[in-house]
Image 1 (cartoon, rainbow, N blue to C red):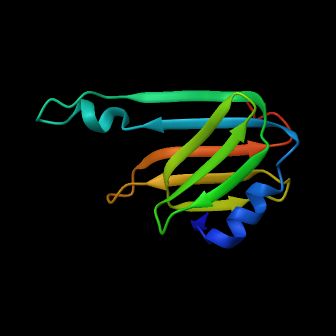
Image 2 (image 1 turned 135 degrees about the vertical axis):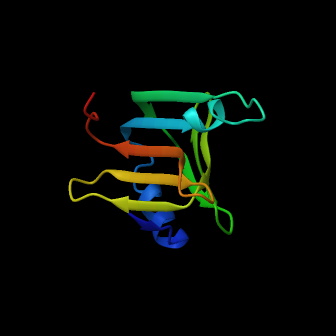
Amino acid sequence: MGPIQRVLADEKLQSFVGQEVYLHLETTNGAYAGNNPSGGMAVCAYIRNVKVKFSRASITGLGPYRAGMKMDGGWIYAEGLTDWEETPDGKLLFAGYDNEGRLAVSLEISKTPFRV
C-alpha cells in the first residue's frame, strides 16, 4: 500500500461503476480512545461483503482524500483516505491513517466476496 495517487485511484474506482460489487467499509478509533486519559469513547462502524451497484464514483480532495459512490438510493463515502493499492486479483483497497500511523478508515471494493 502506498500514498494515494488521486487521478489513477479515481480511474480505478470508476472502473467499478455499473457493476455489482462487494464492499467493505470500516471506521474506527478503536481502543485508542478507550485508553485516553481524557475519557474519550471508542467508536467503530463496520460492514463487509455488502453487494452494491453504483452509478457514479470519484476520489476528491487534496489529501487526505474522500471516495464517494452514488447508488440509486443514496451515497456511500469514506473520508480521510491516505493510502491505496490494487491487488493482483483486482480488489481496490483504500486506508486512512492518522498522524500516529493508526488505521482510522478502510474501504475495499471487489468483484468477489472478501474472506469472512
